Image (cartoon, rainbow, N blue to C red; front, side, top):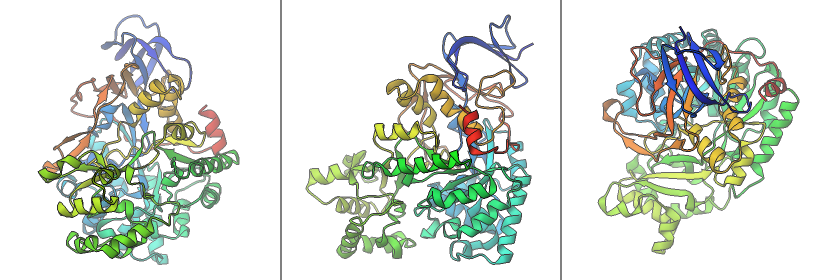
Length: 573
């Protein structure tokens, strides 16, 4: 008997074909039939005209730590995600020796905005090597399929310790050890290598994240250690590295590079800059060299306090104080001459800087003193105008009044629908950068796919449903070499999303206290979702997670090799 029949759905297959009314049958985790299916399955779902699509592929997540205590990978499966790629930016938690574990998670807590106490309380360290980590994932049986990137920064830390953030050049012996770790990761099923050269990626105490100071020759050596030509992908927070700098490496090893960088996001102050980078990548693709941009479909949000003001770290006024404690920072922030120096910095801007002096994009997210509640959910520029004050003074005075604990949310990039739409549609773009699992204290963008369907498909019409679904499913799956997913086709894995196209979307942000040790995080809930299935098993019923002794997600460890960027792109269309 068929295990599952979803009857009477409007099927959008993820391959760009026109929607059609059909039944879908599932057997042993795979799609067995599409069409008019006679008889019921062991479980039958009456779709009643709802839309059935492949599950969303999220290629940029940070669930590396959370998965050790939460097999549901909340909230992503509830938001339609059936496959998640972890270890992005090179910031994973493996390999990690017992002596180096706390250093790894201290840095992770800052660069990815995670609750350090929750990490220390929640992570179950029953692994050390990459192979151990993959075995742990199989024991945990997650609710979504997961793939894992080997992490440049984590590997550098495992070899060099604290010197990984202090010394640019590794010794030949250290580099040999790093290469061996990459070889081991790829042999144990890594989807590729994650790395970062972002100016804004700093760790605990303001130290640079290890890979950001490594010479490009080190990255080249690690990419070369990944195995045969075409094996694996490179996911890189590329900072100000240009396509011209990255293309030779992509050509040399035949591996596609997927770049995440604010420089390639729409910026109203430099509206032509991002599209130029996309066009440069498209030219590389036509030459057979895979250069793609991970482009978010939402404004890129940065959560911070003035105790860890990383969106400002690329400005020189912050250079000597990045590692200061809150008590050391307070007199600096009160100093009128320091304030003047920061204001002067903002007059001289360069690509790669997150903050461009746009105070109208800095929101007060959380205040702690009752008297300051009036500032919550207001932008600093608006407060300054209302109170006839300077914007920098507003932010610093409020932060100082609350012992630097005031939470701010900066929405600096990817604002402006028409400009963003042009990037989302571009052949060199991949809809991504949810950062799911990270920055939980004040934000949650894990529902990027549902937002895409609501905003860019239903409300604006920049994509029709067939193309919108393709962009969230088979397009990233094929580019990343994720086999047999992201499509509704006979023989494909039955990763499915059932939703109402008229109401699909995400709720406003909501704060809950469910992290290990009672830590708080921000989540968003789906609207219009009626069911999520991973390998034919329902994980979310539209209201709650479905309880399973073992999650139905698979640990992905075999991937299609790149056959040349142009051919891959053509096959996905």
